[in-house]
Length: 355
Length: 140
Image (tube, each protein chain N blue to C red):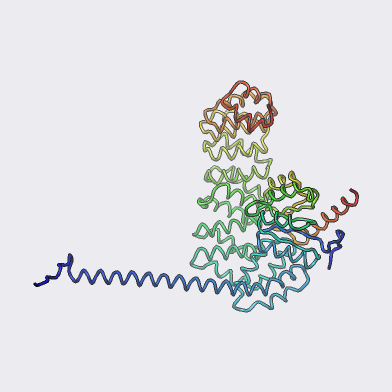
């Protein structure tokens, strides 16, 4: 009996091609695994080396910061090839201490900072950002120009690090330049940018006033300036904010201007604020109600009370908070007793402990 | 230098509840080497409470931003323990966290220091709190 070979569903060429592909995939996978293992081994080895070096530096730096040993005792321990690591090490300390200790750390870093400054033009944005960060912490005065120059970097990460460094060590020369760049930092929230910029302190308020008052600036940037001025409780900003409310229809900018008035507004500003309690934007209406409570008095109660029936829950809650701020617990209790739609919230949140 | 030891148990015991390694190193070095305190360290809130149960503390330095149970939680729990009702407690807080500071005082903190801090100032504050604690005990 003759056994016939089973016919293959594909030709020899396809068979070899498939086999070759499988071998290639296996080789690639093996290569990737080997690379990952080698990289991990190298990282672990570097971490061990760094830890060993830092274990030598640690007791000395602590004595130097304490004033028990001169800085030279530590400098002597830093070898030529370890200078970059030493600067990164100092960065961790300089973020923790202030006062005389910070100046000691900056003095220790000074001879090594040219190495770092060279990295400000590195092709990788992360390296440039780290370099700017180190210079900002360890050499903010000596490298002021490089840090300010980094505001023009093409990478937003570098720009925001430079902005943070400038905000931390306020310099009147750079503040305008910094505010010109804020509009480009679109990846970061307004809250983050406000928090960063307010570190410059009330001495920089003049620059933020310029921005808030300038209609040629983007609304987002003007709104950020408004929020910063509100944090500063900057009195001269009150009139500027009222002016913004009369001319701008941008809700974000209006909210920022209202925040300014909530902090520093006066009775003269209430006219424009009252009109905004009927604005189509709930955020504007709610913030206008807050201003009425902060700046106005009992005369504003009818307007605030009307806002309790606002279609937006958020606005109504602002009205409840405003009545509490004005000390009108009687009105809030009346809400609870009449079974108003906010009765439960008022009872649990604004009048806790009342029967 | 060794600190005075009014409790008769040897060096005074200070709890440092802090998760940042550099801050911890600085505090441990200053408090133990320079001022002779015995420092017990915890890097999270739960561990801090365990240390407080185990040791007889003379003072505590609590970072507000601790992992797990935060510094304010630790502070509240310490104040609930009768033996720590009057323990001098100093809070470490970040710049711009006034709300945390106010909350800390409401819960019974004695003082606070903003990070980044001056180690010399922090130690001076701890020593002052300890001295005041001594005076309180003496007049009680």
